[in-house]
Length: 96
Image (cartoon, rainbow, N blue to C red; front, side, top):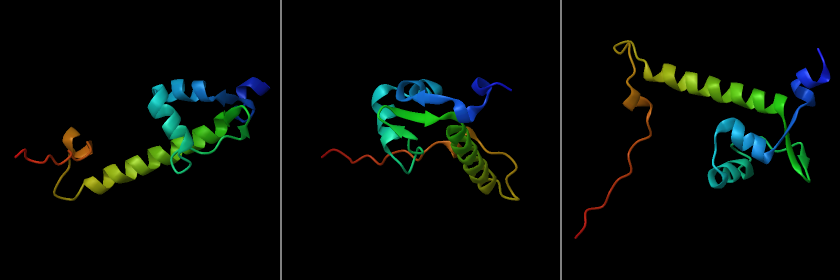
């Protein structure tokens, strides 16, 4: 295995992280600044994220999503519809 194959030795710039997750610039940079959402960069000037840390973060998010999906399945429901996975709609005020 070469160093380039080892995710511990692969560093991604902010633009590469945005491209990896398909985020646009505005939402992507908001996500990157949110330390509760994305792990902090290992280098700050310029900001760089290590690939192995992002992979671990992805695994945690996948595990949480799967746990949430399992919580939706109850003994009386064997299937989950797409609408069960969507966020709840915003409440709208009536005009007038």
